[in-house]
Image 1 (spheres, rainbow, N blue to C red):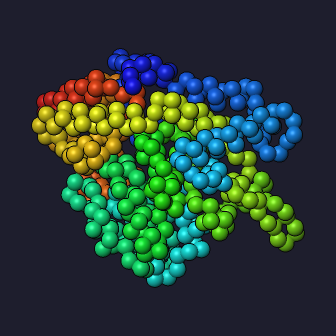
Image 2: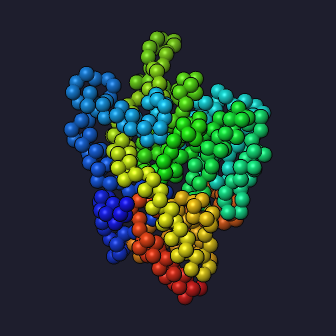
Image 3: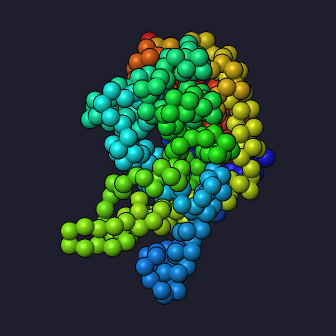
Length: 409
């Protein structure tokens, strides 16, 4: 794949910021959108705007066909066994909260264990934390190695017959660690526990096959994979979804409503109350078309190469600490770091003056920051439109940042 040619398909990248050509290194927070996705959303609003499932007129039929067509694309994208296993949500956070609030409430009881890791995003930590408090369950953290990886032996020691749920990120949004989800799911199932996967940082960058992973639930967001904001997916095995109760009630998700009781629609619509995120789903479908045309394998290979290049370039800078696996084959396309004696927000500010966009802060992972013994970090995250020249610009910007603060201090 040619990243320079792909870059031309993203209108936002063709601009200057503070007098410099934009280098966008914040795709882990949200990716940019190709013209094909923008046009798909625009076309819906210009030509097809109508509510779905409810009307027999032409616009309603066209909107419904595109909305449900996006569901079919998602099913194929993650190799779910049925379109009924694909529920549209507002994003990863909404999906994980739905799993915890519905499935968790019905299946976790006092004395049960919920196993997560120190590297989890708050969206895959707080719902389980709150569930454990409500139910009197125990929240357990699997140990991590110094490089930010999880050993399967540690997972085996942590998961017990009292464990009900194991919830782990496919890829850490801070460390870039790629976790062995398939093997972790096997360990969970050996103890009759359920495997929940936060796929927000994985699904946009690598091929995800839920049947091969044998996960029970998977959550991911459209906006991190070239799609619109406000749309996400909750995948669940059909049997589990059938047993779950909805968490939102109202129009569209009902079958029959009486004065004192109601029944729900079949899957997946019982979880999609109210007017759904129609334009978002259509945009997500267009994003999947875009990514599959390029090839997830090509994207993965490209990002691994960028990660390796970035590790090598940043290692040349004295006083810079990189967090996460040193082996580029064990990490996804992001690098989180700190520059000695310079606050990450100051690093990001100087880089922005050079037209380079990076993220600074705790990245919604405060327990991980505590584990790393830092208050915050800076993060450069890569995607299919980034190049080695972008990383060279980052390295030069960091050297300039270091020199500036050396003079100030």
